[in-house]
Image (cartoon, rainbow, N blue to C red):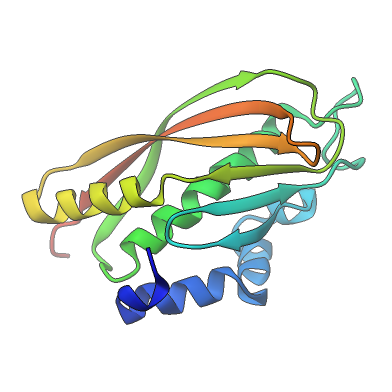
Length: 166
């Protein structure tokens, strides 16, 4: 999806997600992710890359990245895409309703979590708007070391619902 084809609210949110504001937002709204060192590396309407460093704050006693730190970064890679999808629709609620993770290798260095399901998220949000019924979608975030080795597959089920008038 080209940026210019999206409504102004999506373009504005995308600009914020790729700037210093997302780091400030993490500090304010998700302080644990901020202190773990989770950062949005890049974000487009189709794809989000979120990094997690390997350091004393994120590691477990077995000298790998703690599973909860990995889940935090993986969720953010899906959540920023969901945030983009609802940007122009202020009356949409979003919630993670299920998480399934498969760990394939120890994460022993900086890990990047990538979600490439932006189009599916936009479609689910639009379907919720069109039908007025809640929609659920399962999307994947893949954690990879710098070498490209996959360390985890994270499947998040997101629910989107149009909120009633308040």
